[in-house]
Structure formats: C-alpha cells, structure tokens
Length: 557
Ligand SMILES: Nc1ncnc2c1ncn2[C@@H]1O[C@H](COP(=O)(O)OP(=O)(O)OP(=O)(O)O)[C@@H](O)[C@H]1O
Image (cartoon, rainbow, N blue to C red; front, side):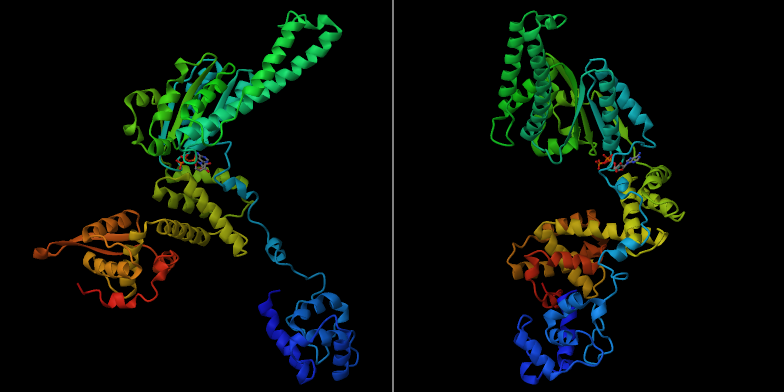
C-alpha cells in the first residue's frame, strides 16, 4: 500500500485514538516502547469484546504502524465493531480474497496462447507468398552443398516484405541439409545496421570462425589423444588410420595444440585493418568449407563506411585455398548499388531477387497463419485480421506493421480485460503505433527543426489557420533568441519546413499570392499536445517557460 493512502487514515485514527493532546504527535509513539502502550490503554480503555484492542489502538496512533497492525493482528484479531478502531479501507482481507497486485491481471482469461510468435524476433516456419523468392534462393545456394561456390545474391525490397525472414529460413534449411549430407557449409548472419564498419564486420566474422575452429580442434585433439593412449598399449590401433607411426600421431597432436594456441581472437578495436583481414582470412581457410555471408541492411554498411568491405570480401575467393565464400546482401534501398565501385557492383549483383510489397489479401494470409498459433481459439472477431491487413497494406504492404498492429490490438484488449479482440482494439492500436512513430520522429529531430516545429505548434494552439512561412519565421527567430540558438535564414527555415512536411509532421502547400509571390501555408499533421510535450522534454526547448508573448508578436517583422 502506498504511503499516500495511509496518511489520511492515520490522521483520522489519531483523532479517534483517544491519545491525549500532548501525545498526539506521531514522533512520540514508539512501537517498541512499552510505556506508550500502557499510557494509551489508560487513556482509552478497550471497548468491550474487542481483542487486542489495546495493541490496535496504540498502533493506530502511528501512521507507520497501521500497516503492521494489519499484518500482526490478522483477520481474527481485529474488531470492526469498535467505534475507536476504524479500519475501513485498510487491507485486512481474509486469505481467500487477498488479491495481490498481479492477481487481478492474471485472473482474466488470457487472449494470447503465445505472444512471442507475433514478435519480430520470431522466425516463422512457413512464409506464405514467398515461395518464388525462397525457391530462387535455394536454386542458387544448392551449389554450396555440391562443394561449389554459389553466386553472390542481392535481395531488394521495401521494409517488412519478408527479406530477412526468407533468407534466414533458407539458411537454416541449407545448414540442416549440409549436416544431413555431411557437407561443410555454413551461413554467417551480420546485421550491418549494428555492425557497420569494415573492422567490425571482419572482426565479427574472424571471431566466429576462430570459435568454430577451436571447437573443431578440441574435437580432433580429443580423438587423437584417445587414439594415442590406445596405440601406446596396442600399436595395432593405428591400423586403418591416417597415422603410420606413433610419431606421426604425436606430430599431429603438437600441430593441433599449436594451432589452438595461435588462434588469437580479434579485439573489438585497436588492430590495423589488414591484420584483422588476414586473421579472418586464415580462420575461414583453416579447413574446407563453403561459407555464405549474409549481410542484412548492407546499404547501411556502404553508407557508413564505403564499399571496401564488399570489395575485400568479393575478391577473397581467388586467394582462398580450402574454403569458398559467397555473399548474400539484403537491402531495402533499391539505389544503394549506385554508390558502389563498378567491380563490386557487378560481382555482388550476380543474382538479384526482388521482394515486392504484400497486398491486403496476402497480409491476411500471413496474419491468419500467425494468429492461429499466437491467439487462443475464438479470441479474435472476424473483422480483426482483415482490418489489420488493410491498414498495413495502405502503408506499403509491410508485414511487420501488420503483425505489430495485431499484437498491439491483442495487448490493448488484454489490458482492458476484454475477452475478445475486436475492431475497436485494432483502431486503438493503429492510433497508438502512429503516435509512437510521431513521438520517435519528433524526439530525434535536430534542434533547429524542433524550434521550427515548436513555432508552428504555438501558432496552431493560438488558433491561427493556414500558417504561412513568414509567421513561422517570426516566432522561430524569437524562440532562438530566447534559448540562445543560432538564427537560420528564412530560406533555410523554409527548407526545414519542407523536411517536416516530408516526415508527415506538418502538411504544407504552396499558395500563390498573386503579385505578392508565393508562400507556403501549413498546418500540423500530428496531435498538438503530445508533440508539444515531446518538444518540451528536450532540455533546450524546455527552458522556454512562457511562449505566449512570442505568439502575440507574430505579425511583427
Ligand atoms: N510471408 C511471410 N509470412 C510470415 N511472416 C512474414 C512474412 N513476411 C514477413 N513476415 C514477418 O514480418 C516481419 C518482417 O519481416 P522481415 O524482417 O523479413 O522484413 P524485411 O523485408 O527484412 O524488412 P527490413 O528491410 O525492414 O529488415 C517479421 O516478423 C517476419 O516474420
């Protein structure tokens, strides 16, 4: 129970306690002090029939001890009939209905059977409407299982079109088939949004292969040592092995031990890049295998650190002795190859696979598949899935968005203790996701854009419609002066307004003012209150205490 709830009751009970005026201060009551108890009893004798009432009365006089009264006395020890003892509102329930914080929440029938299935981290076993793309990938990668080098693949498609999910699905199948037929083939996944420099990509790959090599070495060493002890007793144990003599076997054991010692992990910073590259090269070439390197969000890597990594990786095969590598790049930026060196571009794009956006019907199928395993039976009304699909199809056929909507709708229904997810939950989920997006976009705007946006908000809040650039600029200037920020030119501010327009935060249209030229008129496209709150949470804008005077001066020049 929180303190705020206790305090008024405690005050009330103090009044009722009968403790004489000079002792009513809470600091004068000491739970551990026997004399206080006695005094209280004398001042206020227990009412007939009450049990433990002396203790109750005494403890009541101290707000802090009210709680312990509940606990110590329990349901058997209290007396609701005592006029002096008022426990109303104090939790003193019988064991049966003693509901904890989580009991209520748990008691409702859960809507979800397995919510994890709707999260982005879940890799589905079935990917409806991606058969063509999956088959094409498989047709290209099957050469790895024949010990040949598969062509490099570039996968394109807008966000949420199933590129990563399909590529991971194919990789899992490839690895499991390679184990089945005992062909050395491995897939390494790298998310270039996180691992975005050549050093990090090569270091991550090097360390992965070093770890795998160490496991292989440990395994071989164990077998060699077992053979060694068997052969020491009976030399015939070496028959049918690759070792003609015990010396050969000892030499192999030495060699393996040296390899294990020399394989040094790459630190996350500090080495020259060519050393990292050669460490990776040796690690991958340690034994025969075909390696598919999956570079997800490959455009981020190129954007951040150019195409050196891709250049180095794509020319490795001509130098590798035992192994082969193939690259699978995934991007949602169709134009990123324009920035590549032509050699890298042609080598990387040997095969291209496009993932088109899903339409509403396809999204419905995808959602239905997932809903069957993630929700309890009959937990969704009939219109939930079509509505989620329709909303997501309007965006750009994004399955991630559709799944987010469905999960959020379920969570909102669950939170409101509804037994079934209905259309209204989907609409609420759509609003919530949209608001979360706006908050995130506004929160990460540069300060200058935030000031411009704040100027628009102030005008809008003061009932100005069709706000023009001049009005925004005037208020913007005053806000900048107030918080000591650089004042940009009106032209630059107009550019920032265009950027806000592109982000969907304001809606600006160019209007002609006849011989006065043209101007932009705009309005906010996002909820005023929430957006203002996000802006004011920025430490610089938060300094603006009273913005009203700036708005009044909006027509000044
Ligand atoms: N055909 C499908 N069937 C089932 N789930 C799918 C399908 N396509 C996409 N998904 C799901 O949608 C979500 C987004 O998919 P994925 O991450 O593969 O998209 P992406 O194209 O790689 O997007 P991004 O470019 O933003 O990384 C994932 O949760 C994925 O499981």
